[in-house]
Amino acid sequence: MKVRMRVPATTANLGPGFDVFGAALTIYNEFGAETAAEGKGGKWLFKGEGKKILVKGEKNLVWQSMKETFKLLGQTKYNLKNLNITVNAGIALSGGLGSSASAIVGGTALANALCGDKLTKAEIAELAIKIEGHPDNVIPAVFGGICVCCKNEQSSHGDIIHLPVPKLKVVLAVPSFELRTKRSRQILPKCVDLDDAVFNASRVAMLTAAFCSGDYSLLKKGMQDKIHQPYRGKMIPAMDAVLQAALDAGAYGAYLSGSGPTLAAFCDGKKCVEIQKAMTKVWKKESVSVKTFILDFDKRGLTKI
Ligand code: HSE
Image 1 (cartoon, rainbow, N blue to C red):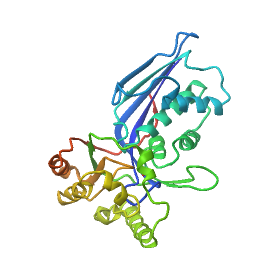
Image 2 (image 1 turned 180 degrees about the vertical axis):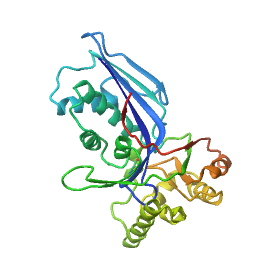
Image 3 (image 1 turned 90 degrees about the vertical axis):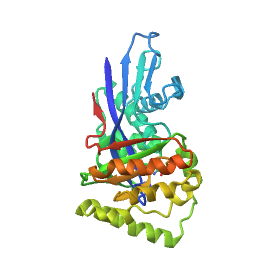
Image 4 (image 1 turned 135 degrees about the vertical axis):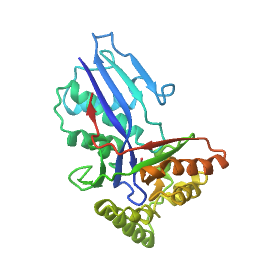
């Protein structure tokens, strides 16, 4: 038996919506699992991003997620000796583009498919969030589009709101250095200043209004943040200058993607190239080498291929 899954990259927070907002983008990781006779499995094939550094075996995040899924489904038949696993990654590792959420969702979905598709997409998301720890990459990775995750006591993803997907492009500037989400979360203060909370609440309202009304001029303020970007910006050279360059070149809004270091801008198609050049220019001045992408929003999320 052979199963394959495709999972999109995701950009979380969208500025002020820390651990709440996330959007799926048109770069993908593909995951495959094939059953083999006992003892003939255990082969790993990595292609694309991170192929030289991804770990094989027990510590691999795809496998760990598969194992959790087998456990949940009470399936004891599969192990690393009777499965071969492939990863073809388009998503940069530790870049703030949901690469770990993608591996977790991919692994969970592969194991679910091997067990006869017992879990729904919502149940896959629920388990994946338990493994990942926060919902805002997992939810758009599973469902696609732009999602708002409203955590509650009953489930880890809580209520999900799917916002209208704008006909905008997303320009990503991905610097060559990595920033691990764990570290990028550890540096955040445990308490939020009341003025900063009020600031972010007002920006989240503008962000939501921008998508619902189609008035994208609201994104400039609606993507501002005071609760995580100022702290994370200390680890990202010229972050504010790159974001400002994107706005000056005509982006509707710009922000730190997830926990970074990728910076993202939403814009009209005709402005993309100018914005891409402006962001690159600032980082080049700081001797930061950067890859850029011009993407659309993915509307399908997790897909069997
Ligand atoms: N909301 C998470 C964070 C996203 O900002 O830490 C991580 O990609």
